[in-house]
Amino acid sequence: MERYTEARGNYHVAYYSVFIDQAMKLTALDFAKRIILTDNQYSRLLPTEVRNSNNVSMQQKIEIQRTYMGKLGEMAFLKFLQENHKNVNTRGMFDVFEGQQNVDSFDFITSTGKSVDVKTGFRSNHTRLLVHVDQFDHIPKDFYVAVKIDAPDVDSRNKIVDWDNLSTAYIIGYADYTYMKQYAGIHDFSEGPARWLYYNKLMGIDKLLHLF
Image (tube, rainbow, N blue to C red):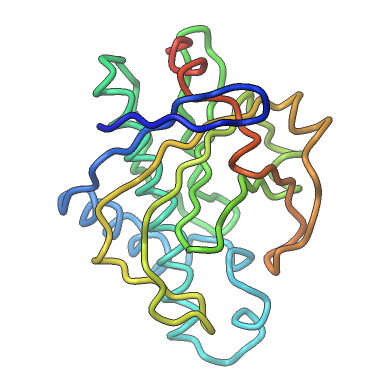
């Protein structure tokens, strides 16, 4: 784990990097394949142009990628907590539920019972914490954590990245529900309307770390 600081508004805050090893990648990819290849995930994760195409193999690849990166981001945050000597309940982290209405819904829980949802960016143009409006409105969480995985693009047209050529995840920061409800913008980034905040507007993760 490495520590960095940057200016955010009038403050200097810390963010961190953690190493993504091969075992983490294999575990996350196995989880993603078990969900997508058995039709247990929402197709709304797809970009509009891919969702409306007839290229089934590309649809599956992008759905696997999004689920893979999301789970890898959760695992990176877990590693960050563990390296800070926090005991975390991971029960259900790799459970796959039957049926397309049951998406992966694992949350981290603080010592006071507050829910924490990890949102993962992984492309070079991912610069915002995004929470889909339907999730924000109907399945609200107390805190939203931004993790950015350093993955190179290999097919920008179809939004594919190199799954194997990545080794670093950055624990950028977080926002709480009340702040996002009041200040987050709403925009459709091609996958449905989402609330968003730029990474450089987020709270430093140290403050949230103290709640675990």
